[in-house]
Image 1 (cartoon, rainbow, N blue to C red):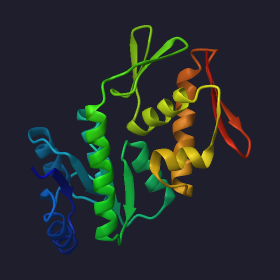
Image 2 (tube, one colour):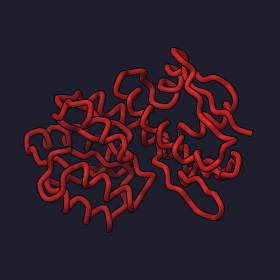
Image 3 (tube, rainbow, N blue to C red):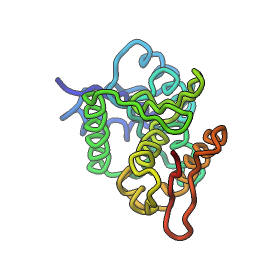
Image 4 (cartoon, helix red, strand yellow):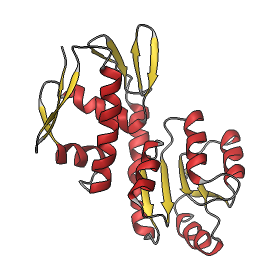
Length: 226
């Protein structure tokens, strides 16, 4: 059975070309309006979402935020003519898995789709394992940290980063290795996004003085924890 993609794009020419290419391999449901796309998401099951940023009704950032409130696992790929690093970082902070700048190649888009679909399938087949870290319990499958019965929700990228830190606790991890292992690239934008994720994790762990994420100058980071 073909995987089902939600595709939100209001440029009719680009939408036709992209849909025509993707439909050879996937079931593509196309929307030209952000609100209509979100309404459909609430009634249908989608395996991946591809969102233009500039959409009528509800823009791509608003749509992604709304989708994330309903589903923290479905992969989201942004497509946008917006090239500012602030826009890309904003998209990733909302929980998107990638941000492709227009004009993009269909081959690159299809490669990204396959990577994220395979990752989702792999995650679904792995039995849930929790980790104890200081006074926290980390649930990587549900992207959450639990302390004193209170759950703190993480984004998928924050959870992936924390899992890598915990699996290499008290060990220095090189910055470039973290980026390549988790996101397949060591570019500037992903690096900035990672810094944002680490900053949030540090704020969360301030509640436990035995946990800290150390910055190792010109090398990387180390999670220090009991």
